[in-house]
Every structure is written in C-alpha cells, then in structure tokens.
Length: 113
Length: 109
Image (cartoon, rainbow over all chains, first blue to last red; front, side, top):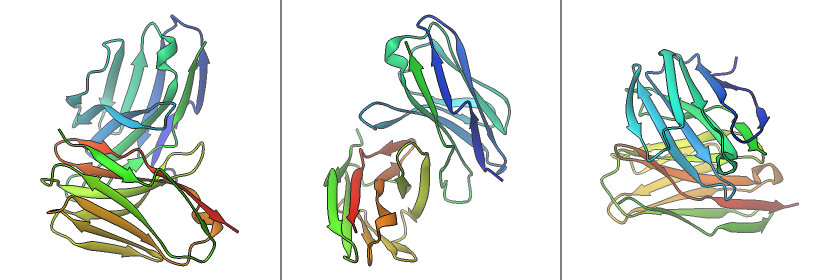
C-alpha cells in the first residue's frame, strides 16, 4: 500500500491552462506539504497544511492554491500555467509525535508547453 | 536565515569503499535533521531522522551523526554498493524544513 500517493505522475499542458494535482496519504498524519523541485533539483517548500489549516505559504504566486478537503488529502490547483511552472511537484506528510519524519510521494512531473 | 549546504555536489567511488557525505547548516536551533535518497525520476525516500537531542542514528550500513553546535551532519555509508548510487539530500527542520541541494553519488562497479 502506497503511503503518500499523488496523481498524475506526468502532466503535459499548454500555457494558460488550469490544472490540478491530487495527493492522498493513508498514514493518518496531521500535516501535509507541497514541494517544488526545479530543473537544478533544488527542493523548496510551497505549502504546509496542518489539520486543514494553511500554516506555511512560501512566496508562491497566488496562481497556486492548495485545497484540503480533509486531513488525508491536499490537492494543488494551478491557474494560468506559465512556462516557469515546469518542474516536479512532490507531496509529503508528517505527524507530530513521530519526530516529524517526512514521507514523500513519487512526484508529478509538470511540463508546460 | 537558515542555509543548508551539502559538499561535495557529486562523488564517484569504487564499489566496496566506505564514504562520508557532509551537510552543514547555519542556524543550530533545529528541531531535527533528516537524510533522504532520491533515485532519478523518483520521489524521496527517508533514510534516517536525527532529533536535535540525539547525536547519531544507524540503519544497516548507514550511520548519520549530528553536531548541532558546529552545524554539521554526516552520513556514513559502509561497504558501498552500486545500488547506493543516487542523490542524497539532507533537510533540517526549524519551523519549516530547508533542504540542501544534495550530493550525487555514483558507485563504480
């Protein structure tokens, strides 16, 4: 059973489109994250959700909006996609009381043409 | 501002050798430090997590140490194997999590 799963694995789309990436974790964790890995492989946090509340929002354009329908899901919606949004997006989760060990999904490779 | 640096950026060693990967951070007030490996085109796999109160953690051939006062952590890999080839990242947690840029390790058969 996959602990943190995200879909789709690959996403190719045109500039200006709106797209969503879904993430689900079955670990019962209380915090979920979205990370962006750029072409230089540098990982940077975008959002963190704890019990359905946004607690970190790192200088991310407001075209990106995280949506958490419940504690097990944190979806990423992107409006008006731009070429510079091309990257690999990773979902992750952690739990208070376990040392906040991070568990990552396998990533979504987004290519904006 | 917390900065995390990993040196070297890339490393090639013959199979069977022991090796050390380095991670340094500028703010010693960390909550924990975690080592990950990332295979090409894959997500991150957690290797070891060291809490701020701990000095080291071990898992199989891997040993991670933490020296908060000097802002350093090392990942020691014993008896390296070709399957150890991957990018290794360290991440420190304060209120948020900051990743280093990783060390690309290549084990030569």
